[in-house]
Length: 489
Image 1 (tube, rainbow, N blue to C red):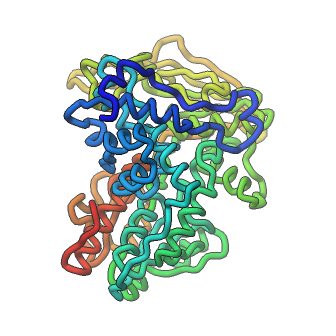
Image 2: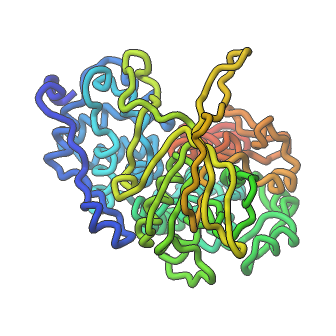
Image 3: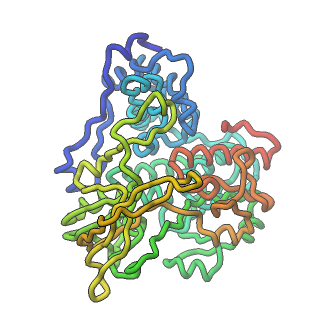
């Protein structure tokens, strides 16, 4: 490493951010990347640990110690080259990845981990500003045609890799803009969408053809989805292309079928977030869901729930409450037991800092309404105990029932599977969770020349896992088409 004693001399630096009171008044990103001096100090903290657990914990296996050292030496141009060797879109992961690499950092055993994510953020932003991120068109074209269905991070990464290998790639997306849930599910204050547009421009120059507003399936399903859509059937894709990659998201949300579920004001989180992202893009949304002046209850304690909190605060909600059915995690993990794995511990997001009441071990019993509109939520506390088989089960706490006002309830309880009609249309076998059945070696489904990657294959996961899947699937498709591949996995 550049400075052997750096981890003893320098403390971890957190990226600066705009104060909560002012940032809730707009939808722009509010985190400021490290300047060169701060990034150099963070790079200096990277130890000569011998075994880079950070790289193995990173789904795309970023070569983290190398670019930490390069940033310490202020060799930014080489740092972005090393970063791009494993990650197509570090401007996305540097903003919204939860950084499992930092949990695995050797320094994290008894100190604060190296700020790996903040260094990644600094590298890629500096690279774009200096014109170091340029198109990489292929030297030779293969004449092979590949269809990629779904334009989230898995589809984008897969399409870019295949285009660079010389194939003619068409990326299909049913929505009117490319980006999948990265565009429509992540709020602008975490990821501004011009970042996606900038990558699209690069990919177009590399040979990728984008086909938004194109529904893959039946005309009936396309009409049910809504909008003015071009429709292509799975059979048409298989006939027209030499290989097809299905890389859509796990879009089927977990529901809560209890009394009052059909009341006006009870919605899935993605409906709420998608509408706001469309509005921020300039679309006119008829009947847009709004939290303005309302008592908002978010059910689900993960990232999607946090995004609902931040969006509700920007709408001007009267109150925001977030419930989680699992017990409250500890403030800090027992690192001797959890390192280098991702620990369960209390995490407070930037949205929580902006204002929200949070509670754990809460289950929702029913929704109460008047004139068809929700007015309150009834719930109670639960305890988690082991049954006779050793499995954990939920038990109501006697006398803990409560009722709180609720004008808008948002389900942010995760996603159960991809859209099943998509898999049915291609005739793809499914695993027990409803995902496309394909292994992580060749990514091939049971249907000839049809591959699956991302959440479509592994279920709901992180953006960095999606990028990994897209890259590895691209290598598998290239091998299928050409007999061998030079694409990295």
